[in-house]
Image (tube, rainbow, N blue to C red; front, side, top):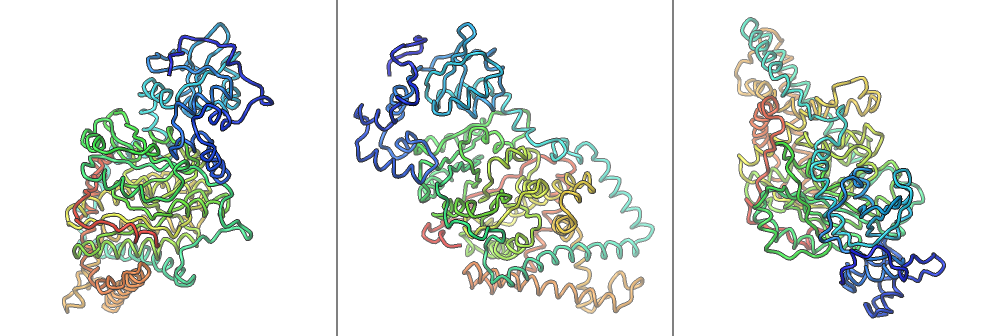
Length: 634
């Protein structure tokens, strides 16, 4: 391409009026950039896709970027400019925030008197840009530039601004960025000291009270699971939306564009496998944008990615360092401004999504009510046979994602999202401010904030397979991060209980308490629950001097009943996931959950002293690999 950056105006390229403007395809065929047959195929695709014709041609490999830019230049009568060595005018850029320029993919090139010359990548959207700039500049004239050049210059200029915004997108009221436990670490110590004092002066009464509290938290959590279980059975065990309009279409008239975010951190071995799994997706490439989100200082992942060739629909975004915070939600927040899609999804590095997953998502959103802003898919594991721990982990996930969560979704309760295979309407996500960069379970927190804002979350019957942690210590580290995040989420949203109640209503408020208090409490107070097994062994219970034996035996019987219910849910989940042999391992889950106790006390320690520490999940511990042909079924 010849350098035209020094040419300010060319009369031969004066903007044509809409009446005389020829279609883009005409210019491409006239310049012999594409064949007639390729144009016809692209036009057929455009009838079913919400994407510009030039983007479809490039994504299909029927034209390159330079050819499309030249055709756009002729179609709109715009001068092309090369921004390779351009230095943006900071004064002009300061007239609008970074998000505005990124949203319009535009860059102020220079000013001629009272006229602003702005470089645009999408001239068909110039009217919207002109409207947005009307209050800041008197006259605006567009020139044409490559989108990647515009984005690179904007990223370099607004680097610190975007990095800081990634830390603080969520409002202070709904964020953990001030870390209540960090600012007041003495409070938990005072509570522990007070509890120790009570144990010294009234050991039996204190022990009995803690036993009662442990049973209460277990009742809350088991009650929540049983509610979901019964609802699941009452609806035939199917995962489907409960809020579809009566006469909804079977599929969207035009498929939407989706942006899938894949945060990577210290992933030396996953890159090639990830690319292979993503290439099995069947969603139209012109509508699919996969963004690999890297930390700027992550040389390990960057080196791994240099060894592979990425297709045009997969791009890399590096998150600049700003302060000491390095978390997944912060990386997602930074990447959000660079997304083109109307639907934002998240996958993890080790994920193997179903081939037709994104078509399923598009169809479900098209059929759902407008208040459905989020879809959560089923998470499963592809290595259950590695060892006993991976089998139990797979059973736990199957119970949660195939039995309990679908039931809770049907009841309209708060859905604590999984960290992957979730899909959110971009408008709703931006309305909420994205993810809380200071919460290590940004997924569960987002589920609560969606519900508080009046949005609905639905479960969808599409599966993404992951690698189950199959070693004890990595499992504990991963679970401790989840539990610390649950503690954080609960404390953040309970700052103003009355306000939370007003937003959720009694039914959802109770479900919120049952999940977070029950999840953390059952592990935190588990040693007091274990004391009731003494009765089954014929040994005296420490509370026998305060409580009648009938109460103690009744409590022990309730705990046995709860364990049988857990086994029943696990067996049902094994059949629901088409892994019937795992049902034989359900009784051994009683030995699996004590690992969560260790993780909980680790999480409590970190909540007080290291609330923002991200204990990264270890990948590649198993030699198993998902079979893409098996990931299409739910």
